[in-house]
Image (cartoon, rainbow over the protein chains, first blue to last red):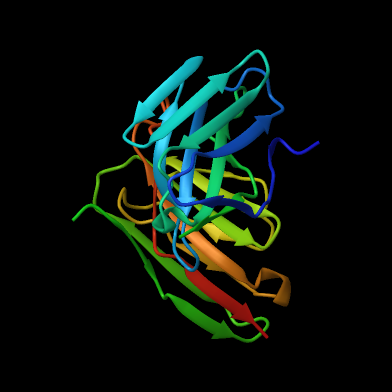
Amino acid sequence: QKEVEQNSGPLSVPEGAIASLNCTYSDRGSQSFFWYRQYSGKSPELIMFIYSNGDKEDGRFTAQLNKASQYVSLLIRDSQPSDSATYLCAVNPPGRRGFKTIFGAGTRLFVKA
Amino acid sequence: EAQVTQNPRYLITVTGKKLTVTCSQNMNHEYMSWYRQDPGLGLRQIYYSMNVEVTDKGDVPEGYKVSRKEKRNFPLILESPSPNQTSLYFCASSLSPSTRNYGYTFGSGTRLTVV
């Protein structure tokens, strides 16, 4: 089992719709969770981080964390063609020397105009 | 402008020829890390550094070396590159590595091809 799993997609949604991206992780003690956006040929860019169970909203983006079920999701409201990118979920597992972040392989999102 | 600067952006080299990819950040971040990104495998951590002179292996350290002599710089060294090290490499830095992770700032990436 991969430590961080995402559906590779592509996920296709029409412009204006809500895009829902999901991620599951294997280490129950993980404490910090992140979503990054990566445009083709570019570097990842941090969108949101979340530490506590529940929802965290920032503009059109909402991150949702459920530690009991070991999943974290990202909702993008009013999706725009400019949101078309690969979205990377990242998790900080506990108990590792130093500080490690494990990334999922990413979900490709395509927003149709 | 707060940023992580990697050089070069593109590099084609031959097997066995030592190379260094430089990384520098201007945000006074303590934590720096190198990742490689391969299709279907996502970002995999090569090495990381908690502070000056403190480095540790990530998940795929074989064939790589790093050093952290100054806080702002974290070069990645390939002593004898091989074709399986052909990849897209990212340097990243972060604030507060020992308490909360507030997320990474990534460099622009280095696309390395080893022939």
